Length: 63
Image (cartoon, rainbow, N blue to C red; front, top):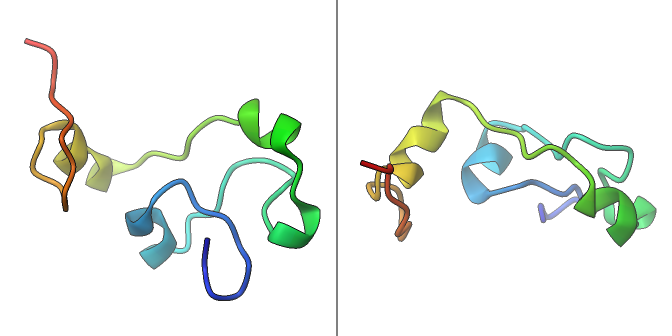
């Protein structure tokens, strides 16, 4: 969650201003049911985390 109340899927998305992909983008509009049904915003920078190379990320690419 950004300083201005907008919701992001991760810190990296926040730095790129990639807000969550649903109607509930801000804390003032918070709705857990809507957020639970959203698609997670991904982009090229996400592969760093899935490969275990992101900032404190422990993910792994299936082999």
